[in-house]
Amino acid sequence: MSTHPPFRGSFVGPGGTNEPRNGRLLVGGAIAVALVLVGVYLASGGASYTPKKTQDPCKPRPWGNPESLGEIANQFSVSALDGAACKLGVSREALARALATPAGRERFRRRYGIDDAKLAEAIRAGLVRAVDDAERAGALPPLVADPLRSAVREIPLDQAIELVRDARSALGSLEGLLGPASGLLERFLP
Amino acid sequence: MGLVLADSSVVVLALPQIYRDLDTSVAGVTWVLVSFNLVMALAAVPAAMVARRSGPGRAAAVGLAIFAGAGIACGLSDSLSALIAARCVQALGGAAAVTAALELLPATVGSERRAAVVWASAGATGAAFGPAIGGILTQLVSWQSIFLLQAPVALVAAVPILAVARHEAATGIVEPELRRTGRPHLWANLALGMVSAAIAAALFLLVLLLIEGWRLSPIGAAIVVSAMPLSALLGSRLDPLAASAKARAAAGAILVSGGLAALGLLPHAYVVLTLPPQLLVGVGLALVLSALTETALAGRAPQAIHGGWTISARHAGVVVGLLLLTPIFTSDIATQRHDAIEAGTAVILDSRVDPLVKIDLAQRIGDQLESEKGKVPTIGPAFEPLPSDPGQRAEVVGLRDELQDQLNRGATHAFSPSFLLAALLGLLALIPIGLARRVEL
Image 1 (cartoon, one colour):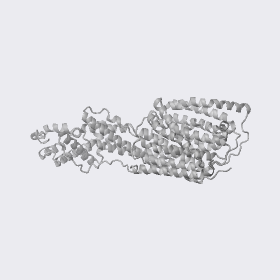
Image 2: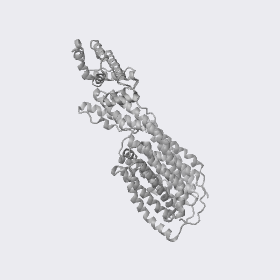
Image 3: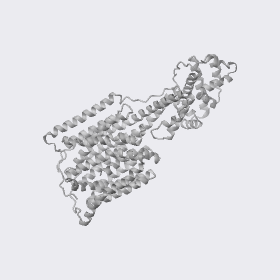
Image 4: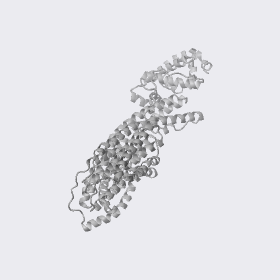
């Protein structure tokens, strides 16, 4: 047990006559340093971060100038996703995460309450939009776009999903379905 | 003393590992910290009273033994509830050891004033060094080792105290009549609580940001946050400026708040940008904790009881800080995570990568999200294996980095409101600091 007397007056420091001046210097210095650091971080954009917003899938997304079948297929997929997502009222990103596997589709169904019939209808609408966009951008001539549009309106769900995921192969294989238009794809696509 | 007070922060860097191993959530694992601090807050004054009655040597020895035993129980815990229960017991032992130490110190260091300074410095240093030590142990050994290693350290510390305890038992030198304890220093303890809440935020949030937000390894995070204790050492050297305790407390609170505000305004997710704010927080915590503890103890007797009040105030502050800020940042993390993943998926979908690859990538990101419910996602595995085609591979690596940047910035931003609120708490501590008058008893 301590027998030392309690010490007194901690708020009175040992600095003697310089103590008030030192105290003011210390507090003033602390304020200055803190303000400078916060100011530098603010000036460097510390308060300006806003996460990138995803685009409304119902708004048209401009096509670039596709120069190969691969690039057309890429933009075709994105347009199809936009169209389907717009129809379903979900983000294009959420829909894309649903289409790769049956498990992803099941999770999507549970989360958004969208059954396969609604999904199929939406993806077909998305594919029609993709054909429209491609035609408008001059990537598909009307002679190819018209029968393709008719074909995707009747396409089963799994094939529709496959067409979104792998538009390049699917576009190629659709040549067979186009009957009289067979061979035109290769001719018209760069 | 340092060991026990380091214990409230030593586990911070292990928390991410603990919540993975014990399959809990950020909010759940916070209780590993909250439980210890809550029991310390509640038990410190009663423990000090027990130490006064039974003799500080005995109280410290028994406290350290309980602390060591409970530490082993923490290390052997296989569930969150068992770990939290052991932490509560550990805090009981810690409270007894810490408050009794203040009674023992004057005999060692020569005076009560010197004892208060040493005691306050040990507390500040322990709290500041805790996370770095915990991080190194977590990565090199395991999170369990943090607790298991405390046992031998506590027992070694107990050895010299045993001699005092034996002396007390043999001579019966236990103060028979308790001196009037006087009221605790309200303003100093209140300020101590508010500043501790802010500092807890600095340690806890920064560690979570580094490990969970920016995915640093525990040892990497330990190296980064060691800037804070090193700055605290620098801060302890400012005492010779001979400013009053009030000025040191005010300057410290301002520096802590400035550092926290800067952490809340990080312009980029770069580790180096956390260093200047840490410098401010470290210097500030050394100034403010020691000045306020000295003030709370000044002119008051017995030291153990008033030391108990400071421990209680500090740990109550930590509890309030954690309970106030955890719900805010966990909710912000969830929102930011969703926004960042959506934005990242958009980047992937708009890329020139083959649609087959990118829709597959989008799906894998979704799977990764599902597997990390409630946590900040680690997105790297979603990109493995990388495509074999060199062109696609470069494109995918670029996308991964871009998505990682989105996540990093999102995670950084998610912590901003909590850091800024903590800065406000630190600034509010200026009110009781300003109200505290010259202490005379």
